[in-house]
Length: 403
Figure 1 (cartoon, rainbow, N blue to C red):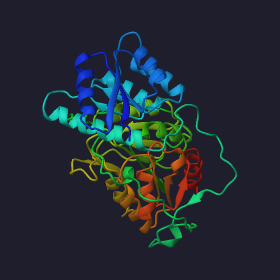
Figure 2 (cartoon, rainbow, N blue to C red):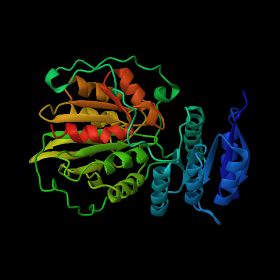
Figure 3 (cartoon, helix red, strand yellow):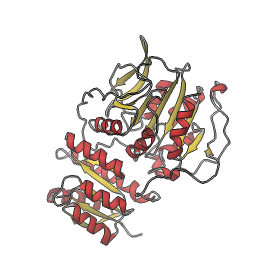
Figure 4 (cartoon, helix red, strand yellow):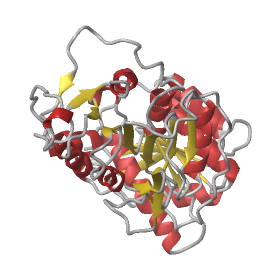
């Protein structure tokens, strides 16, 4: 088998050499060309049609964001962004992911162990990017789908059957490598201090003044998540009568930038969660990178609890930790969603939620996933009662929380 063909683009000669050496340490890969700016990235992509590109953000002549836009518009190969950790870099990285970059890694901040972690993170993402079934990167997701019933997954028989609707059984798909892997955090480098999140901008949400709610939504995602969350949250109304708790696998600082970007494109208030804050309907809370997020009972309702407990499934925050924290609260009508991502985080937690009587458990369908790993695992574990393409999930959730 011919090795996978990779293009490395960075304006630093040192970084070009470092990433070339890392990639070519695996005989399954070869670096067919290097570039030093975005213009060269576009030209090399068009001429060589590589299997994947690593792309720096800040470069002369044309930066990484502009190059990415062109590559995505041409339905190009997967692009892995190389990011720093400054505030500007984190914002640009989130923008790149929202535009269609496959994933990102942080550049090493020092020698030795930092480089090893970066190498491991890069090669994991490259192996996934070149082996998954390719999907178009350009264009909008469809507004409607052909006339057909939505796929249903084999449901868990809940302990409180009145909370779990019946579902038709489908055969679980064969397990893929993407769903089997325990995926380390995206950082590829050591931990960063957690940044306090500033107050989210005020929004005219009708639900803002409410202090009680009957429904709650929990969402877990990883690779491809920023773009999927943008699509999902932007289609939910400001008066959603339920809070949304979200775990997106990301390192510290990046989740703050993600929340800011999603907030600017959503009628809901979207913010990075803070320890001890009351949970309110019409607000989406994103777990801070490097910390687990749980739902807890507070003096006047429900609150966010953030912890530094050990990683679960290679992650902190972990989707399983979030989902499992909702299990005891059977007085709430709970709705769980697993979106695109590598690995299996969230599968066991979704099954436990289903067994405890969750109303809705949704896995994103393969046809709209960037990586059908986490959703596949949720289906195989038996926790997902519905398998829906991304563009059907917002309307389903909006209807479910108004029941």
